[in-house]
Length: 92
Image (cartoon, rainbow, N blue to C red; front, side, top):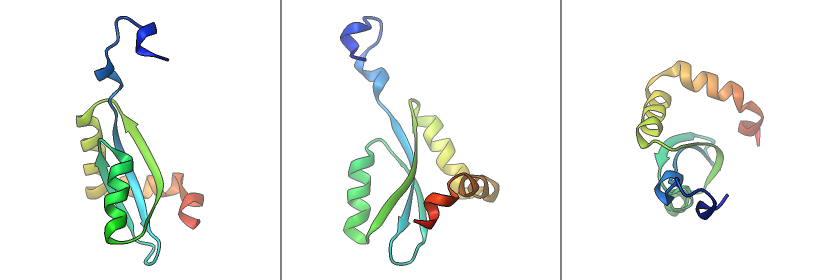
């Protein structure tokens, strides 16, 4: 839907933040991160080594995205649950 059809919404309200999971193609190691530009961030990762995007979540709030990233990086239970949800994607 275009902003012009919703006069009460501003362009800023459509700005998204992403929490993502990348898998290193060679080592199969997973990397978790957050960004406001998913395409640019994947490109930056691939300058160092070849990574494949296997999962992402989109948030309107930057603080929500940062909180989710911290939970994935610091709490094993969050990663375990996420891996169980995307188990078939991890096999690819």
